[in-house]
Amino acid sequence: MTDSLTIRDNRTGEEHEIEIVDGTIRASDLKKVGGLATYDPGFVNTASCRSAVTYIDGDKGVLEYRGYPIEQLAEHSTFLEVSYLLLNGELPTSDQLGQWTHDVTHHTFLHENIKSLMTGFRYDAHPMGMLMSSVSALSTFYPDARDIADPDNRYLQITRMIAKMPTIGAFAYRHSQGKPYVYPNNELSYCANFLSMLFKMSEPAYAADERLVKALEVLFILHADHEQNCSTNAVRSVGSSQVDPYSAVAAGIGALYGPLHGGANEAVLKMLRRIGTTDNIPGFIEGVKAGKEKLMGFGHRVYKNYDPRATIIKKACDDVFAVTGVNPLLKIAQELEKIALEDEYFVSRKLYPNVDFYSGLIYEALQFPPEMFTVLFAIGRTPGWLAQWQELVVDKEQKIARPKQIYTGHRTRDFVPMSQR
Ligand SMILES: CC(C)(COP(=O)(O)OP(=O)(O)OC[C@H]1O[C@@H](n2cnc3c(N)ncnc32)[C@H](O)[C@@H]1OP(=O)(O)O)[C@@H](O)C(=O)NCCC(=O)NCCS
Image (cartoon, rainbow, N blue to C red):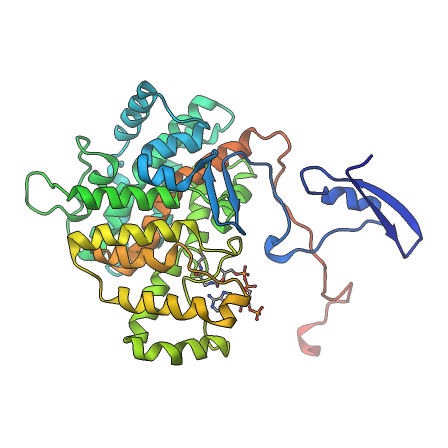
């Protein structure tokens, strides 16, 4: 064996040979080294699956879906075409794309009882909480979704979920505004229909500016997958129990809700607003370096270089601001980036802007309140979650996710009656 590792156990003097495949060793092979396990909080150096969906080279700043560079997809493709690619592994032919677009478009409506469920939320409910609950509620509307072994059934649920996410997201937004919910218009494209459901008032048909529709397509494409990130891992982990895909995706939405994941762009805007003027940037940076807070929108578990999505978003900012006018926070963001990229603290830790640093500025220009930012992320990420879920379901090597622990608590003790405590 050449591709192998020889481990000498200094406790016993025994040597063990462990096979190396694809730059990894199997953690279960370590068991033969005196029952050894690995300890890896946050999975910083553990592969949980084999996946052919998304490739990232964090050092070089490369992101590819099914081998296609993100830059090319953002420039030439649409969100539905990219969704097809992620789910099926290949770009669609014209007929395949036509069928896929038809199928998604004809599942955009929600059961009226989902609407009733949503109207039951408080007026100030966070739209991510509404999205998460409504998606998990879909599992009760489609009990057939439990039959995850049937590929046709999986296709139906995947189509439904990709189709209904914008409707639920838009209803959640209208709810927070106290405005009537707007039903889907299936004459429109995926993104144009989403904008219509969000912003239509009394006009017979809502026609969004094509440049804004394109910007939304790009933003959704950029968010469509990112290999084994926190929310995808949540979808896979919950999905590994063989639950229906609505429940698994609801878990992913929960993970995305957190400020260290999808909530970061909302945090970026709050941070920029708090900084207020470029004069306050040096003082803010000093506070970050002293560990008082983080520079939100900077740093990434995988990218130790400029996040390629941030480059594309920066460009999309220009296109959107040409329609909406420049967001005044842009100046602070640009200056903050410039100062941070020259500062030893950020350089030595390889902290670069990530996708969230500029996305919030665009979303704000598109009239979204900060609470909606993560909902947009969730809509964009849905095909990625589902492509990964599907891969998990057909992967014979996968098992129910169940990590080990290092137990640090007490061992067997006798119960103490209340009177003696
Ligand atoms: C994304 C993130 C969670 C990755 O975390 P991670 O891989 O666990 O990296 P660590 O927290 O170990 O960071 C390594 C070092 O950089 C520092 N660091 C990381 N991100 C930082 C940030 N945004 N601002 C300031 N310092 C940061 C850490 O404090 C740590 O410093 P130390 O070595 O002196 O302790 C983290 O960079 C972060 O919290 N960023 C801000 C939130 C954000 O933008 N999230 C969106 C991700 S797309």
